[in-house]
Length: 284
Ligand code: PAF
Image (cartoon, rainbow, N blue to C red):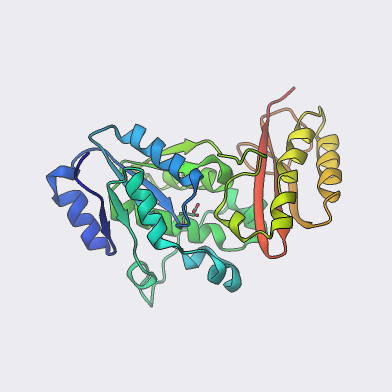
């Protein structure tokens, strides 16, 4: 757009620019991130530009949201390479970067939380109580602060995406939710900010997650699929399975037949690094 990238750290500065400056009057598309940007995020930014159009405004938020972490060590270890992130945003043609700190986002006596009570109960939600309430709360705040017309989320976090769609539907939030496909390394490992925390041995092992899911998804019955994926993941001496489940693609509830579109999803630990992946399965 040729207006140069703006970096702001307060909600009021963000709204002043986006709602007060004529240059930013176009369609505003938000890409919410926690930073440590990689090719996956840059694909979201590219997608956001397509949705915004050449005269639209692409806003990236970078905020490591403390209320969605269930483990202090995970929050502390989360990478925060802000300089590199900003350089990447600039190179990707982002118009505005919003980088608030925790005090800016959360009043010390905050007492309101967005809670989703159905889709968030299975999969990652079962293992991480409160995680999706933290995600919904920060995402709704970011929608309000940026007054965005649309927001782009990665399909890799399909549970997060389903929950955000549900929140938007249930609360009549006037934001279009756009889904962007998972980006993978050439060996199949889904891109994640956590990948850089894997040891060399674990990084080499990690493509087995996608391989196991993919192989299993080719089978034609639910029980066989789970058994096969479990066996393949069990062959790795490095990972610990957090969950491996076949769920209905819409309700995210565990299923034991393939009558409807479903998702085979796994979360595994390499030491304290938790990785997730999934494959979609159509009824045979
Ligand atoms: O997917 C993420 O990186 C985060 O959950 C999000 C959507 C930025 C909210 O903090």
